Amino acid sequence: MNLLLKGLFITILGTLCTNSFAQKGGTQAFSFLNLPNSARVAALGYNFVAIDDNDLSIGLNNPSLINAEMHNDISLNFVDNYADISYGFVSYSRTFEKFGSFAATVQYIDYGTFTRTDETGEVNGEFSSNEFAPVIGWGRRLDSSFSIGANIKAVYSSFESFNSFGLAVDVAGSYHAPKAGFMMSLVARNIGMQLTEFTPGNREPLPLEVQFGLSKKLQHLPFRYSLLLTNLQKWDLTYTDPADDNIDPFTGELKEKSKVGEIADKAMRHVVIGGEFVPSKNFSVRFGYNYQRRQEMKLETKRSTVGFSWGFGFRVSRFNLSYARSAYHISGSPNIFSLGINM
Image (tube, rainbow, N blue to C red):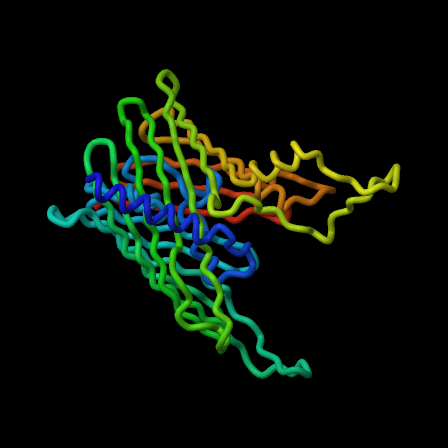
């Protein structure tokens, strides 16, 4: 057990060191791998949570939670995104006594159909764009307190005549304290490389991310809170926005943040907060707040609820249904639907 844990955390530590200068969003291939994979995860603010209650949809992004209680479970997830874009996930789990628990997942995103034109604007047909990734996940409980897991992914993207293929793995470890209602997880996601480039000689990095999460269920209230720290492989997630007006309208001087304010802003961009009110085992209400998303997507003239998310879930017999809305922009929020089936 100690050898396995040591190997897992050495792998994650090595990932932190070798990728501490990873590129920012917009310069990476296969970014769809980081899309929220279920309504519950989206409602809690991001694409990863550390909650151990045998939810197969959580296992995709935290494979150390894949366990025997998910045996023969199915998870179906669909997102009605912006501008006729849609994406989804289909997962199935099975446990083998000698080898551990496995989860097979296919995730995809369909960008729709586009009009093809030449340099003069003449229409000469249509084309489609999509990406998908088959994933095999494995998880195993080492004892009552520790579990480990990993995913291996084959990733394919197609944009008109431009295609790319890559391989990636996730590794994860979790600590469980069920009597205290507490758990925490450390996950390194999308460790891999682009094997074939969209254009020859232009190899792009994958959207690697190291995350730490914890959750705690309160003893005397039907409530669980969660805290997620994202992008631990890179401290500064800020960027220069040319649209920002940094001139004080009254003094005409350049506005500057205080050193404390600058450090606090950079630190908070790593923090996602979530909560889950569970009055009964058959119903729950969820909410989340993503500071980085709010800072990057808000409009100064109308901030609205950008960065906030909410949702609910309920169980009927063998079926577990969830819904969420997650505000990325004032133009609207995507609808996210999930269905879990215990076969």
